[in-house]
Length: 173
Ligand code: ADP
Ligand code: MG
Image 1 (cartoon, rainbow, N blue to C red):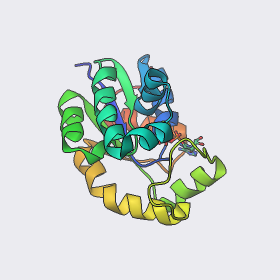
Image 2: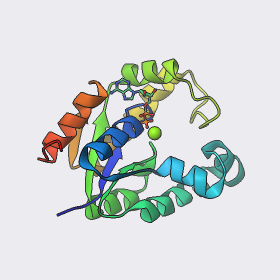
Image 3: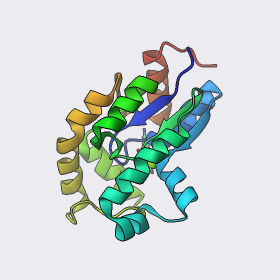
Image 4: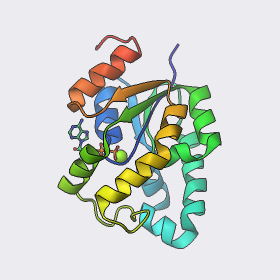
């Protein structure tokens, strides 16, 4: 059965990078909920949060998730998509959910190497490593709850794609 593949995990775990490569390997479409929000609203995440608060952003995120979901798509979700129980339930019911898991230090190294300042406000205003440790601790259980499969995302993107394909029992095209 063809069903959507949802990638969940913290900022920097590789949802976009791996999602693009996975979609290519499967000959599927790729969509990123953050990017979908950006192009449909013409606002950055920071803009939406500034104007509508995190609650407003979360409501838009839930709608984006529903709008982008179709059977043959790979969906990279925003890092906070799993916070709402209804989002977790929707993804689990509609498709296969993959948690791309990496230690906080690796996430911090990646985000420091490619700072995308202004794209998203920090959640706590603290140094990035501290914030990642805190956010991961708060969300780890939710990522696991949402996921059908937990994949080690500290490997190279290619190896992560292979691990996802193996978990899904799909051979590379
Ligand atoms: P996310 O969409 O989960 O926030 P990205 O795919 O945007 O993560 O990746 C964040 C940064 O980390 C990017 O600069 C990307 O090139 C890098 N990156 C992603 N996955 C890997 C990986 N498996 N190994 C090394 N660097 C990676
Ligand atoms: Mg991304």
